[in-house]
Image (cartoon, rainbow, N blue to C red; front, side, top):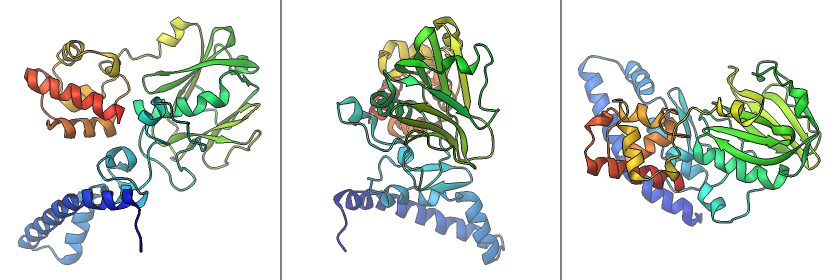
Length: 325
């Protein structure tokens, strides 16, 4: 069998991970046996400890033919299990460099569901894929299948129908459609909520569908993979009301080192909490914060005011590089 170069590269990069987890598994087994646990109890404890993502984090990229190094971004994992699915449709850096957006808007969602909240690079990728499809197009009709998704009442959602999409922007982890008449339609996808681009008039999926937004060129479907109603859709009028949805964190990719350091030292939190606090840093969540800390070689529980200058600079570089990869 002939394997593709990305598959071979991912396999080589995953070897150290496999070896490390093999060592951990043996150690766990010996410790459990010494306490008198039987084989079934040992297997149950191992499953609870590793819970899928720990043992198999290296396998997701191999399944999709992706190098193992960016596994946290391309493998959707959560404390209860692991899904070897690409998180984003395409690497945002490729889109930023002028590459054409991918044809399917949904990131392979027909094959699997996601338990990863879209973060800055993922939201940027959605926006870059949507721009050529809907900017300059009128939003002809809004069809909502769930009453829970709409979180605003004034102006009424019907006011957005017939309005032209003037621009798209990112607001933290939110996607904003700027419409005629100073209207802004705000999508907050949250965990397991995704956008799919379908042919015009496509029906809303009965089990996972939340709503549909019809344009002359096609229909944008809003879906959710989970049972909890966390996705949010808001329609606001005016930039002032739009600003109410901005948590206020700085844009890391636009901030210099001094600003980054000042924001980090503003409150004495753990690095994990500081990186994922939208009031401090915009657009970073659990998945990317883990990768940033790994690349910076810093503990997630270290306090922000305990960092020396070299560590702050290292964290700043890791944040920039990770979000741009």
